[in-house]
Length: 512
Ligand code: TRP
Image (cartoon, rainbow, N blue to C red; front, side):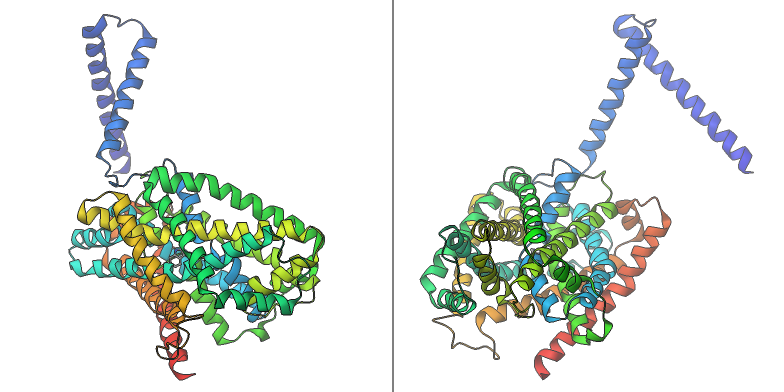
């Protein structure tokens, strides 16, 4: 049977080939009577093939907002979104608080089993929908015969982006303040007590906070207003290489002037006795935040991705780069901390209080301290851009306006919300909403409620609701094994794990 089938197929192909050849010959004959010149015929074949590929590209739906000019740009842009304050500020300090090695291992497992599968789903939904997350979710739901209400997940994401931005911008403002401070030599020979006081004084000074918050909002909005190619892509092309160069310069510095062995050991020794359920929870939650998942950042970026690139390989690359930056940041920070007998478990102040102390005492510390804060500012910048993109893209689609007015309107909104966040440290510090300041509330409501919920919806949508044929078409994974592995992870492992963080986080919050 099989043999006959194959023979028939070959015959069929031969006939097609013959017909095509005849067709080409007759075209040639009519055009120029050059039928005997083989090279010209070859050129014509190439030309026709090119026409075919152009036509295919035209048939492929593209986003009205533009498209990345290559797969590599997409990887860099998504890495820019993922690598941010989460990697350089939060990862080292939560690793310090949770005892090091064993925590890092759990975090890596979470990236693999939950982060990567959800990221694949976000890119897939975005690239299939080719619109802002809100409209992509809606169209895909309709395509699979589901309710349009799925776009609510996109809505929650866009709103979460605005909320995250409002406090992210305040922390980024602190970073900018430290960039300027390092440049002015304000931290030379500073002791830890003085450094703590300086940080407190900054928090109490609403005016200074407002200035740097405003600067950061403007920096981000200018890029987003430039659009996908002239804004996002251009910024990516300049900032991402700079970020990697800076990171490795700093790693080299800490390898030579810090207690590198001790720092390395702290990050990679494995002692399961230090692991608590709470650290597992923190690791899972962080794997989510650090990969920019759950609110549509990656989905929006995916909608500008070229069709022919493979989603699986690309996502693995982004996750690897993000993890690499977090680990290198840890390897750059802990040796400095240990060389100066500082406490790795110092908490959120690790970066803003202990590091200036460390840099202030070391040879060349001023210049390297300055570079370090520039690095964090760049990382925060490329992340914040992706926080705004879903909402801006939606406004452009919905109201048919240009990017600039959309960015101006949203810019004012996040700026105003940001003022309420910075007030939490001074003029509004008495305002408590369920024992949280406004700043804490924005952080809690997004990172612990809206992002996990968004991730859960995305996992259920991709794993249980979208037609399998659509999934296979978009993923076009040659290897059946990888598709099955992803499918199991997105249907079972990710939703259960995310539902668990979500429930446990709320439980912890309201009982402890
Ligand atoms: N991933 C970024 C960081 O590590 C922050 C970020 C950007 C983010 N876009 C996001 C977090 C979307 C959650 C969701 O700092």
